[in-house]
Image (cartoon, rainbow, N blue to C red; front, side):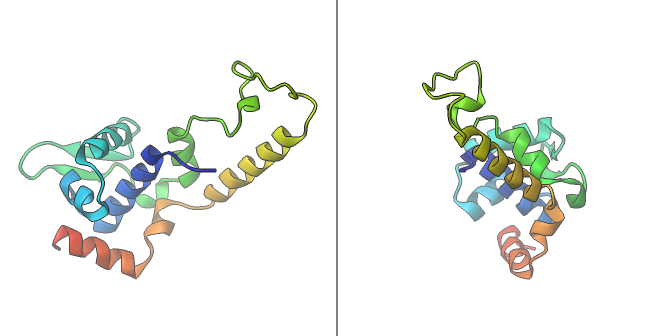
Length: 144
């Protein structure tokens, strides 16, 4: 399974903001990760719509976490940003598979996907940022 860039970048924005423990800008995140500012603006907008971050306009504006890092569950985040099905047969409206109903692949993949999300559900953003090297990386890029 491969996550979309949108989901990947959403997680990176949250990791950066949580590790910084201060207001951060799209420019700083863009520089740190080498990601387009325009793409990050779209990601931050989506994160703000779902309450993961708050944004402030103006000279001292930027991005802060919208809730504590220990209240941001990775399963919830990924499920909110990933809308695609692993395979066509997961979606009855678009399923054109000639062997649908005759093979066990769908069942095996559903179980694998459930395990994937179950594992993600055991982690919060706080668990992910609890790494001293990450703290150093973010401090260097935020200038603090």
